[in-house]
Image (cartoon, rainbow, N blue to C red; front, side, top):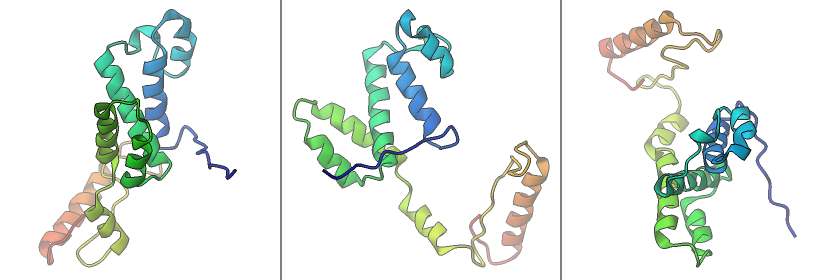
Length: 158
């Protein structure tokens, strides 16, 4: 049997905190889970989700997010969902909707893949200095200067 690669997350991974938060809200719904809730930043079971509609939304979000973590295409995810005959179609569609919300914009991916040019410039941040990790008004000035340069030239995308 082929092994399936399992993602190894750290707290720095973009999806990590959202996955932990959604899972904690689904799991930590009774006092028995207060220690776990506190450990993951949910504080207590009173912040867990018991409303059926909200729980369904959290499960759909988790499903869509995990599909992205595994690098599934929409077609692959849809196929996997279709193999669960006992799961209602509305549950499957909700998971697909969440998957689509998280899907990267193809136009933006194309723009990034093309790289910087006379009309495209990439900036690391608009407010937070990536070197200090703090808000820095000079970062805003960099953006303003780049916009002004585009306006004085042929225009462009920032």
